[in-house]
Structure formats: structure tokens, C-alpha cells
Amino acid sequence: MSLATPPAVLAALLDRPDASGADLARQLGISRAAVWKQIQALRAAGLAVTARAGIGYRLDAPLELLDAAAILAGLDAGQQARLGDLAVHWQLDSTNSALLRRAGEDRRDRLACLAELQTQGRGRRGRTWRTPLGGGLALSLLKRFDGAMTGLAGLSAAVGVMVVRALADCGVDQARLKWPNDVIAGDRKLAGILIELGGDALGPCHAVIGIGINLRLDPATAIDQPWTDLSNLAGGTPPDRNRLAGRVLARLIDGLDRFASHGLAAFAGDYARLDALRGRPVRAIGPGGERIGIARGLGADGSLRLETGQGEVGVDSGEVSIRLGER
Image (cartoon, rainbow, N blue to C red; front, top):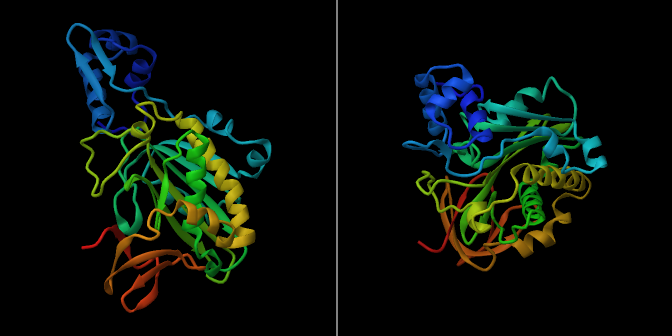
């Protein structure tokens, strides 16, 4: 069964825990087999639903669905005025793809897009980004710039600072930045950033900034690197999901205007304080092979400064991935 639309059973479970299959069927006017199919679809989407004999179905963890009004409540009046649009979807291929499609036809600035489910969510270098239903935040924002694409050097690093600030607004202060585009806590991935550019290389241009944050993941979730989530960092009670979305948007709206005026330099000091790699041995792995050295922070263009046996080199974010520690 597809989850192209919210199953009626989900709303019923949110309203009434411990409902039996017979009760749900009677309430919704469907067969018990149809109830079971909807439960199976929810489980396939990553939502943990327990069935207990004689009691009924129950969600294993609290679920807060995305709500545009609640998200907007996290923005002040000025930020709301600057936000071109806020679209909350049940299911998309990806929030970044949705905004890339809109970029040419909707000329407004600061278009925001969120989705409960992504069928083709992606991370950097074509990797898949999987988020179970209600288990994370998938948010994208389209920002337009008057200048050339070369003026966006270091944007990913600046956005990382904005995301960490938003997490701190919600009481999560363990987050740090791992170049080029990861937010981590204790060397485990908490969030990722994917930026895709469009428009004219010489300007004007635009950036679609995608952010995925782990809220509450199942320990069995298949991710190809060590990970953590906000539930773990917050002692089992992650921040309110809509409040988090609002704070991320608020920080992006203000921060991207600052970046447009002052570039990476406006964020360099904060990045240095949040840099999880600085002074540590790293491997930079790219098409040209690998380089091993000590991370020495960011260059003015957002590259990674790497101290090697042959001297300091700059590593471009478009060419490498980083692994902590030596081989």
C-alpha cells in the first residue's frame, strides 16, 4: 500500500492510543483487513507500531506531524515577512528537488519546503538520505543571490553554523561541525547539509539548501556511518519538531542575508569554535586519491586547510569526503 497520502489510521492512532483493529475499522468505516494494510504501510515507512493482544495498536514513540502554522510561530514578524512561501507536504521525492523544480517558475525568494516522507531523499555525492516517518526533519530553503556563484564559496560552512545555532535554541548544545557538510555530536552524524546551485554562473543565481536532522531513529536503521539523534542527546525527549523547524528557518533567513552581504568571513569565528576536525588527523579521500594530514581549519574560500608532510594544502569540498583518524 502506498503512503502517498496520510493513512486515516494514523490520525486515529494519534487521537486514541490502544485502539483495536475492530475499533479502528468501525470508526473509519473500513474493513479490518484495510486497517491492517494501513498499519503495515506505516511500519514500512519507518513508524514503530506495536500490536498487543486484547489491547490494540499503539505508536511506540510520540509522533508530532509537521504543521505550517506551528512552524511559522517560530519566526518573528520580520522573518515571516521575508519568507516567500512555506510548503509542508506529506510525501515528495525530495524537498531539494521540489524547490529546484520551482526555481524557474516562482520568482519569490526564500521558498521553504518540508516533507514528512521522501521517496528519493539524498545527501552529498548522490548518497541516499533515509528518514523514517516522524523520525527526522527534512527541510529545504531556496535563497536567491544577485552575484555570481563564485561568491557562494563557503556557504555550506556558514549554513552549518546556522544549523548549530538553531539546535542550541532548542536546548541541544553538543553539536559541532565536521567539514564539509555534516553536523555531528561525539563524532557521530546528527545532521547533513546538501546545497545545489542554479541560475547563471555569473549571476543572478540561487542556492537550494537542504537540511536533514535525525530526531528519533531506530537503532536498526541502516546508515553507512556512525550516527546519533536528538532523542539520544536530549535524554529520550527530543525537541518539539515544529519548534525545531521554525528555529532552523529563522536562523537561515537571518543568516543567509548576512552571508549575502559579508560572505563566509561573517561566520569564520563561530565555525572555528565549532570545528570538530581542527587539530586532528584526517584523511581526505577524493578522485585524485587520498591525503593524510592535520586539519587546520577553513580557508577563506571554505576549503579545508590540511597540514601534510609536504606542507599545507587546501582541499576543495567538491572533491573529497573526510574520515576521522588515520588509516
